[in-house]
Length: 67
Image 1 (spheres, one colour):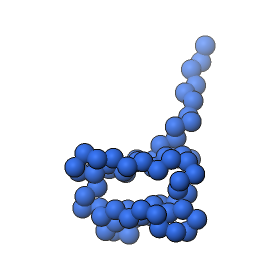
Image 2: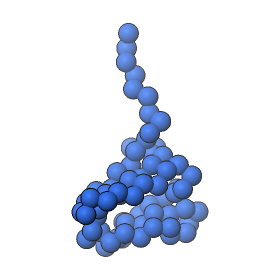
Image 3: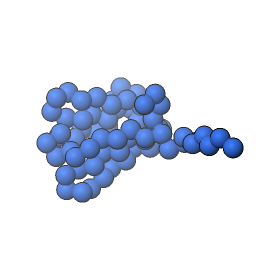
Image 4: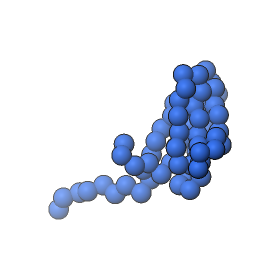
């Protein structure tokens, strides 16, 4: 995905946390954890053993439907 405005992390427990546009600007995976960043600061660190999925979403996408 070229542009995402939301990052959504779902845990094996079923809980979900979402960072929306303006709340994050980068993310990383270091082999053990998913790290959510804003302006270079780590604002969320999640042990990947507890993570079910990480989704990058573009909530502003508009589907093109030809007439």
